[in-house]
Image 1 (tube, rainbow, N blue to C red):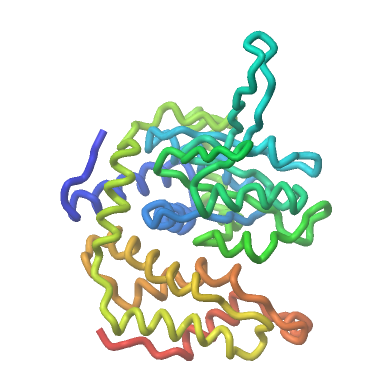
Image 2: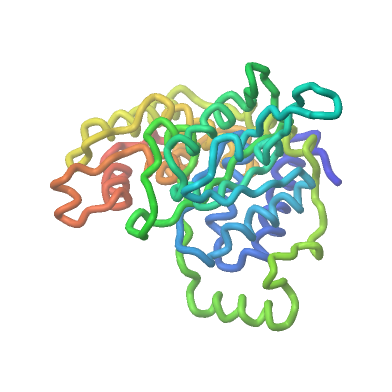
Length: 323
């Protein structure tokens, strides 16, 4: 297993992880790239798509390649906050209370169908995501780094779904959309399952482990050292601030979006083998950073506009600095 010691080694390792995961998650190269950028940025990801598009397979494959702990929580309407974080229980043998840790005590946490649970249970993730610690009966338990939440949600027009609170949405660095593969890619997936190349039961044991927790932390440290010019920071700020003035938006992005743009752009630059950020890095991460932090106005929704169309218009309107 590899721990990078130079930026070139870090970029090479990130590329190897991307290629390895992409061999299993066929036809979703952009999704894999964005998830890795979020991981290297030390951020969390909200994945949206209909069931059966490989969201669980993606997280399992990533955890196997990185050799980090993995846990999955299936969110349901009757799920309680303590089912996520854990609770104190009385041990009759010792006549003392002991802590029973929940599935959130891991490194890669898959929160499956998060928008099927109540707001109270969803809010149990807030401290976990933001503070990277869990409080049980007044005692704080820090989580082992690297820690990342990958939450999946079904489209809101599906029955039995609830919109996530704005405060929780803002904790996600990226919102990533997973769409159906094209017919050639879907045919390849079918053949791989029938041939036994990949398992229909989401087994990924055939993949080699490429690094470990120390290697992931090293990637994050190298990304934090990537140079950000003042002109590029100003460009990110202008993009975010323009969402607050854009026609068709009832709510624009807040300051956390500006931080997310710059942080994710550093990771994008690292994956491209550069030690500096260019405006195109900001553009490439703008959609996953902003799409869940803006809200369409009622008129825009009636007209059939979407966050994607408005963000495309915004990226065309805001001039980028010359490189």
